[in-house]
Amino acid sequence: MSRARPVQPIDSQTPSPPRRRPSRAAIIDAAVGVLARNPDASLATIAEAAGVGRATLYRHFPGRNDLIDAISRQAIEETDAAV
Image (cartoon, helix red, strand yellow):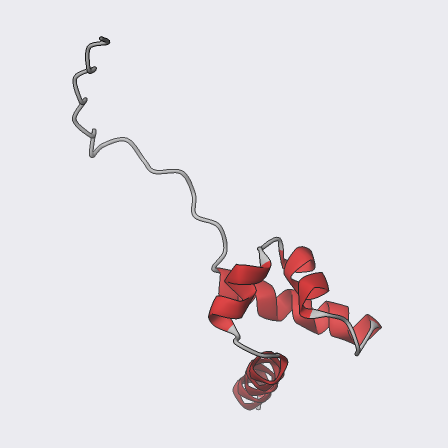
């Protein structure tokens, strides 16, 4: 039998690694670029461009229309902020 190693306490002074950009924003940004080049691009292609798995994309956007709606809302918000 092997012996269990003692658990070391977490040093709260040690900085945690930087977090990746939130997946939702990465997906929307990637979708804008991918769909500009190919409006018929698959969600799998968008997920790959965003650097996320398809399951992650579907967790944020259950369907293509949900993703298109999010892109539209973001565009409207950015336009309103610029005015």
